[in-house]
Length: 161
Image (cartoon, rainbow, N blue to C red; front, side, top):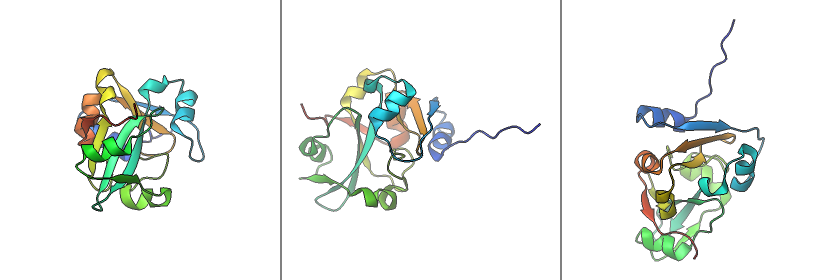
């Protein structure tokens, strides 16, 4: 009898190396679907699901913002939280070159470089949040404090009011 090998993403390996408990979720998907669709596929409450956005600041640095899937990033608040005058979203075609991930599988944990990362402060009130597991079809659920530790993030007010 052959035992089927459990697929682990780099994110899962990083969490395990840090001894951070997590729950993984898988869904069938051939191409990018947005966070709302993923939440619905998994039967997850939308408030628990977070998306990862990558921006470029006016000084040329890259910044990562993690916000609820139904939220809209306030670029002014985002820029202020990282000490920039302005930030703008990077083009989708640059996501892989900048992060090492593809659209739909991008997460702040395990990017190819450690960028300044901010998690929306609303996550601090949740027992757990769900983010991409580093590959399309994979999500991980973990405590917000563990996410901060694994990603090097800090809390910030990031959403449009």
